[in-house]
Length: 473
Image 1 (tube, helix red, strand yellow):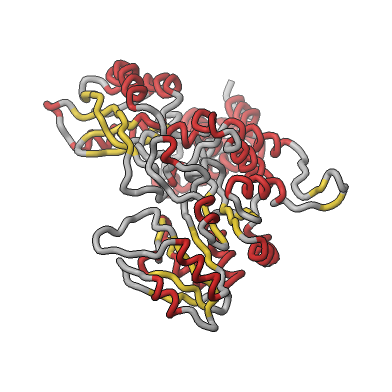
Image 2 (cartoon, one colour; image 1 turned 120 degrees about the horizontal axis):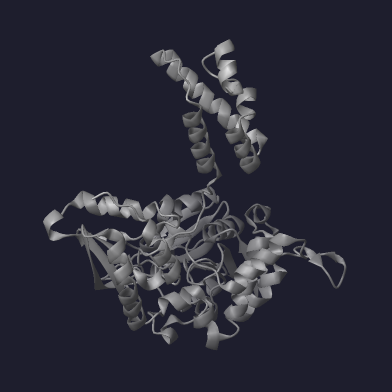
C-alpha cells in the first residue's frame, strides 16, 4: 500500500507537504526524540533545499528514505552541545582556549547545589533582610591575603577596569612603559585605561624604570600609580624595575593610591610545592600595596573571576561604583569560588584536592607509567601507518603564568611510519582525534603529534574511545 507521501506527490507536487511527512512513521520517531516544533523547522528547511535542487536540476524524483536520513543527521547535529568536554593533552595546564582551571569536586558540588534551587545570594538569613553577595567570599579572601577588604567581579580585566574607573577617572594613571601589557584576545592595558576614563602617564623605558621616574611624574592630576605584573613575558639583560615596597612608600608619602595587577595571581607560595615562585596577593598586601587585582580561574584554580583586595577605604569606593553591578558574578560562580577558597584553609591537603595544583605537581615517573600503559591501545588505534613512542617533553603552566618556566613531563608521540612519511598524515591524524566523542587535543611538533599526559586523569575514558578512531592513511 503506497504511503501518504507517495499519494500526495502524485496528486500535486513531486515534493510532499510537511503535514504528510509528519504522518510518516520515521518522522514521528523524530518528533518523539526532538519535539514537534524542531522537527517541523527541520522538515521545512530540507524541503526548501529539495525545491532549490528541483528548480536547478529539474529532477522530480523524491526519495523518502534519503530525505528522512538527512533530517535525522541534521537534527542530531543541531542537538549536539556546542560546549563539550575535551581531553587536554597539549601540555598547557591552564589552557585559555580549553577553559583554564578544572574545578575541584567541592566547587562543582557547590555550584550544582546553587543551580538547583534558591540560595541566600543577597539575603541575610540571621537578620531576615537584604544582604550583600560579596559577603560569601570577602571574609575568606581577606583571611587568605591579609587584606582589609575584598570584592569580586567577572574577571581580572573587569577588576582592573573597575579599579581604574573608580580611582582615576578623568585623571592620570602612572605606568612604566615596560609594564604596558597585552594578553590574549588583544587585551591591552592602555586601551583598558582609555575606556576606564583615565589618562596613561607613561614613564621609564622598555627595559628600565626607576623610582625617580615615578616621583617626578606625580602631580596634582595623578589618580594612581599602577604596577602590572609582566606574567606572560620577561625582559632580560640590562633591566631595572621598582620594587612594590618602594612604590608603596612613595605612594603613601604623596597620598596617591598604589594599585598592583598580579595577572594570574596565586594565594600560595608555589615554591613550597617544588614550582617556580609567582608573586602572591599576600606578599603584595604585606608590601603596602593599596589595591591588588588577580584572577580566580588561573593559578588560584577556581571559576572565572576577578578578585580585588586592599584597603577598606578604596574597596568601599570601588563597591559604590555603578559599574560594579554590571561586572558582578552570579550565584553559581560565587558558590564555586567559595568552595575553592575553603580548600586553601587546609594547605596540607591542597595539592591533592585542587586540580590545578595537583596537575602541576604530578611526578614525571607517574606520567611515564601512564604512557607505558596507554601505548599498546594507541598503537592498535592508529594502525601500521603510524609509529607510537614514549618521549620526554616539557609542560607549561599557561594563561600567562611563568612563561619561561616549564615542567618535565612525558608524552606519547605519534608519527608516520618511515615508509609513508607525510606532513598531511599528521594533520589528518590530529583531525581524527578531534572528531572523537570527547575530542583529544594535542600539539603538532617536529612532524609528529604529541600527547602530553600531564593533564590526563581519565585514562580509562581516553582509552575506551580509541577503538572508534577512524584515520584515512
